[in-house]
Length: 384
Image (cartoon, rainbow, N blue to C red; front, side, top):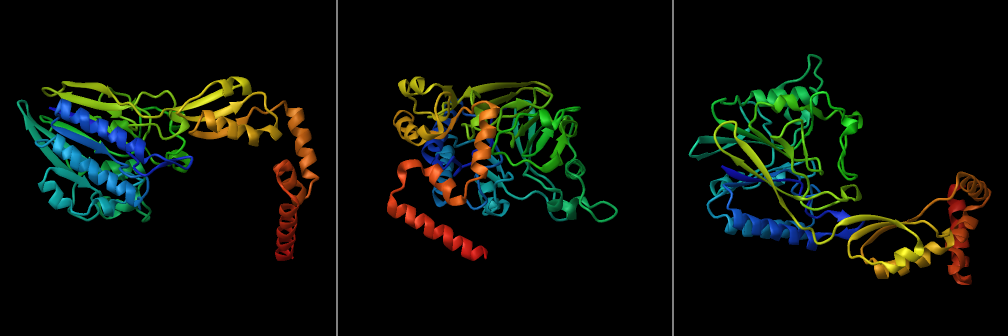
C-alpha cells in the first residue's frame, strides 16, 4: 500500500501582504505531476486546506482546479481530506456523501452527535485491509455531546476528549491502521516550548491543546497536520509532513516535500520524502548597505542593514526593492543601548506633531505640514 501524506496547503494565505496564489498553483501542479508519476493508492491531506474559514474566491477556484487535475492524474486512487483549525468544517462537509462515492473523502466535522464515530475508509492490498481513520481538527467543546464532560459540566481537556473519541472506533490489531489528524501532538515527556513552530501557526495560551503522542501509538502510521515543520513525534511512524512551501520566515532552510508512505505486511512501514520545489524561498539577509545593493534575489527576503542610519531607511527601501522585488521587511541593526536610551529620551519630550515631522524627515511640503497640523488639532478637540 502506497499513499502520499500532505497537509497545511493554506490556500489563500498571504506572506506580509504578498499574494501567494501563483506560487501555490505551481506547487499544486508539482504535486499532481508526482501523483501521476508514482500512482499512489491514496493521497491524504491532514487539514488546513484553506488559510481562512471564509477563503477568497480565487483560493476556492484554485482548490477546485487542483482536485480536478488530481482526480485525472489518479483515476483509480482515493483522495482523503480533513479540516484543520483554519478551515470551515461546515464548508468542507458540503457534498460529503456524494464526493465519497466518487473516491474523494472530504471530512469537515468530527463526530459531534451521539452514535457518530470517526470516519473510516478501508483499502485493501495483498496483505489485507488498511483502515484510514479521518479525524478533523477537534476542540473539546465541539464534541462534548459525544465525549461527555467533567462532573461539574466543564469541557474535557484536549487529551481527555481526544482519547474518548478514539475509543469510539476500536482498532483491529491484526489489520494496518492509519490515523489522519490535525492536532498538536507531543512526544512522551516532551516540552511544548521546545517544539519549533511557525510564526503564523495558531498557538493556544499555555499549550492546553497539547496531546501526548502515546494516545496514538497503536496506529501503524499517523499522518499529521498542524505543525509547519516536517518532524517526527517520537517515532518514525508518527509524523508531521509540514507545509508544501514556506509560509513564514521561520520556515527558512526547511526542505519541503511529500511524505510517500509504503506499507507492506503489518509492522512494515517505510517513508520517503519526495522533494517539492517552491518558486520562491524565504530568506533572512543581514549585511552592509553596499553588500546588499551589490546582490539581488527573487526570493521572499527579510533584510537587516548593519550600517544604515534611520534617516536613510526610506530611500534605501526603494533602492533595495529594485534588487529584491519580494522584500518582506527592512530593518536596521540597532546601535548600542546608550544610543537607544538617548533616542528614547529625546522622543519622549516631543509632541505628536514633532514626532510625525521627525519620522517624515524632509518629505513633507508646506501644504502637507498644514494638513498635519489640522489633523492633530482635530484629534485634540475630540479628546477634549
